[in-house]
Image (cartoon, rainbow, N blue to C red; front, side, top):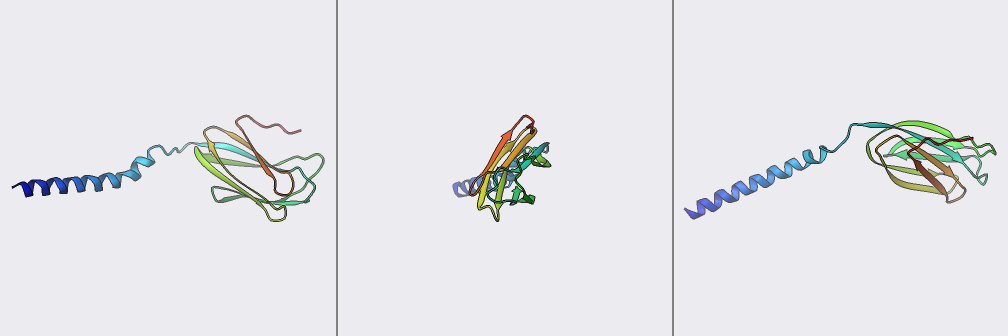
Length: 136
């Protein structure tokens, strides 16, 4: 009689654990937001060391930029208008001729402005702002 009782408890416990493990995916999806926010990415070259510099930028493994960006005294950045879902994102930037790279994780929870600058060999800089950036 006790063996049947313990067997029943074991079966119920295992069934319950299997049920919980199957629900873990559902629970993790509850907090996934469907909200999207505008994100403006500005790309510019602040150094004449390599002119033009090739810049390739990916956000969440999706190519956003693949351009040669030239340096000039009146440097007006090239802008890219994006729409990103609320949450954590990754930008990876490389230059094939400028010997530089960047890998940054950032969070979107409202509109953002990103300023990506090439400053010479081995140096990219990314500034992230929640207020609009102004360029002369």
